[in-house]
View 1 (cartoon, rainbow, N blue to C red):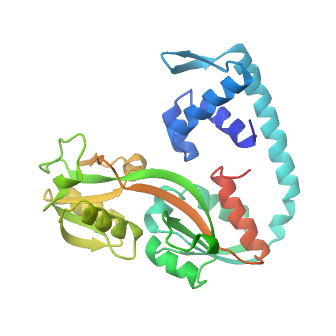
View 2: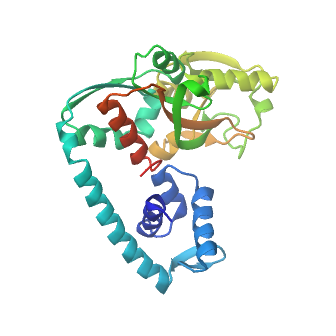
Length: 300
C-alpha cells in the first residue's frame, strides 16, 4: 500500500466508512475503492475492517492500529514534502490554464483556489472555454495546461494526459416533464424530444450528437448555450425541454424542481489534465502540472 492508498484508507475512516461519500471526495469510483480495500486485505492476509453483508461497520483491532500508524506516516510524509518544496514560495511568474466552466465549478471549486493561495507569487490566468475549444487552444499553445474530456482527440504521442475524475452524462428534466417518472432512459426514448445542449465549443455537444447518430435517433435541438446554469434553468422552467449534462452537477448542487435520470449505455464523462509534450517545461509549468495531479491523488 503506497501513500495514495494510505490517504484513501484514512478518508474511509474519516467519512465514517461511507464508501460512496469517500469515493466522491477522492474523485474516484466506489468500485475502485472497494477493489483497493479487498486487494490489500487479501494480499496481506489481514482484516482491517469489520464487515456484515459486505457493509463496513468499523475497524478491527489491527485496523485501528493501522489507522494510527497511517496518520503518523502521512504526517511525516507531508512534513517532508513541505520541507522539500519550501522554496516554491519563491516561484514567480505566469501560467495559463484552460478549464471548461462546468468542470471549474464542480471539480475545481476547492482545488484551484487552494493551488492559487499556496502560490501567491504565481499569476494564474484561467481561460474558461468548452473542452472542444480548449483542445485547439492547447494545440496552438495558447494555454499551458488544459482540462479536457476523454477522448481528447489529440495524437497520443503529442500530449501528456491524466484522468482526474470519471462519471457519466445523464438527462435532466423538469418534474413536470412527461418522462420525469422514468427510472432509466434508453436513447430511443429521446427521439423527437426537445433538447437544450452545450454549444459546439464543448466536447459534450459533439459526444451527444455522435451518440444520437449512432443510436439512429433525431431529437430536436431547440437551443445551444455555453452556460450550464442556463441549460438547467431553461429545463426547469420549460417542462417540454430536457438537457444532458454530467451527473456530478446534481451531486454538487442538489437542484429542486428538476429530475436527473440515468441513461442506459450512458456517455462516459472522463475529465483529463493535459499538456503538450515538450523537451523542456518551465519550472512553474512543471510544478503546477504536478501539483494538480497531486491534489487529485493521481500522483504523490
